[in-house]
Length: 171
Image (cartoon, rainbow, N blue to C red):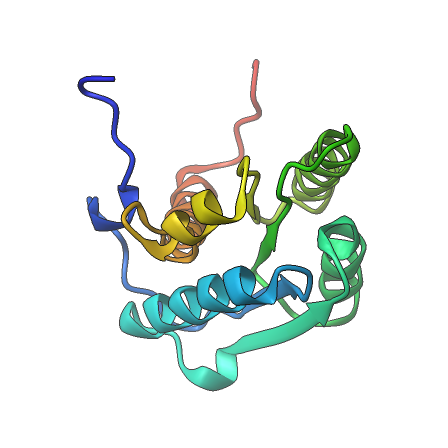
């Protein structure tokens, strides 16, 4: 498809440098060759934009389904400004992947809205293992980098909104 961007990892437009923020990265152990590559790229990118290693909390969960509940635990028990959820749900012979992906996406969104803090959906949903590899450091970049960029941009947005006043959506 002409004009369709597939490697957003190289698109760096106005990524803010940060300080005095704490970010949690929760990584699924399922498909660890994919998820650990994404986690490592995400961490490296956050360090590149000003986070100190001690400002990044890493947690592991068994699978993608557990990402939202671990994010809730982290947000409830530590001073965390944003959470990045990293996982990979590869399509199989049944609809299992659809149920898991939909549940995780809904859980991440609900938690982000309820907490008022960015909770980033860094979950791949490829059709096969090769597509996952292509997006975890392969020909389409590394979606872990994109998740880091998203977290940084959302933290910057939160800062701007907070400094701009107390207006509510729709009013």
